[in-house]
Image 1 (cartoon, rainbow, N blue to C red):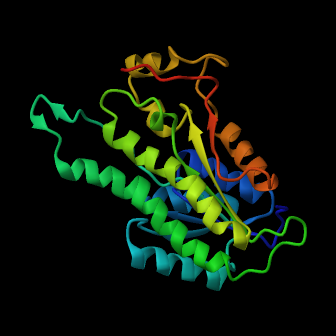
Image 2: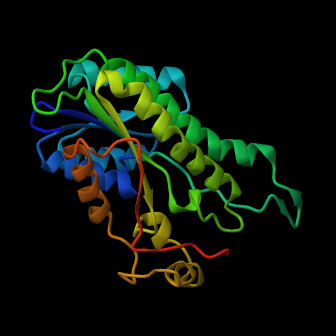
Length: 255
């Protein structure tokens, strides 16, 4: 799908990390970007830098997402691109030193990473379906979600995170099939480890452990490398219904 100054994109979690890199990359291509985040300071800073619309949004709330989308429609137009990067890591063994994991810890991670992604998608898709198809590829839009290599090689202590990202991966093909008659593509990314604030804040021991399974390049990914991949996905109509790894050949060890 060709993007231009009339294209509108929503990027959830765009106030930091990979979402920020994607928001910046889209804006650099002339796209009108709306950033959804609960991190007001980070979101407003990024939005100011790239002249984007900053909208405080809790992806787990139906009303919050509806209100955010209405603001985008009124100020920018109906989005043809939705990139979902809002998420949290969460960690802990199912049975740890203090007993079973608290149920609310598990549900919080799944609620934000999986249910939040679904919540944004369903409401954005309903708006995308009202658009006219593009002249070049006959598309109405593209949804790009964030899974993880942890959906396939989850480490000890990542049960909630892996479950949530596995759910995102599992939604991809059914949704691509469902949206095919409307010309809306659905793709998921499965990133390895990238130099985000979360990774930078990790201890040297944790960072070294992650890097131990890197193949090539033997380093953490740069956010702009993932952002350029997102631009290619948008541009290439044959990318649909797949979970695409971007990990430098990394396969996570058990711990």
